[in-house]
Image (tube, rainbow, N blue to C red; front, side, top):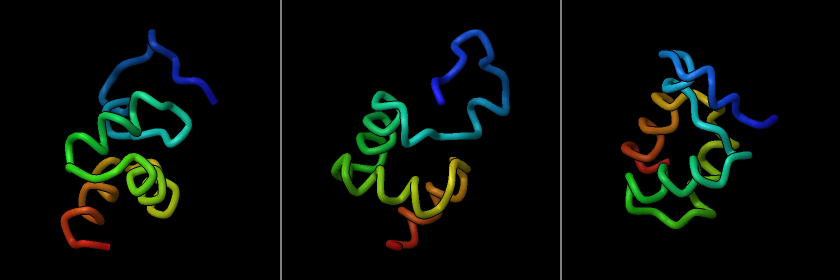
Length: 60
């Protein structure tokens, strides 16, 4: 589902979408990982940015 650019509150910043190429790209660049790996992590751990960040940090 496309991201609503007008709804950018705290809930929006707490989530990352595997369907939005710019979010996958940002997440990958932030963690220094390939985009395909970033997309895999997001799909595996859900849209919670905290859960995805923790998964990268723990090497999962």
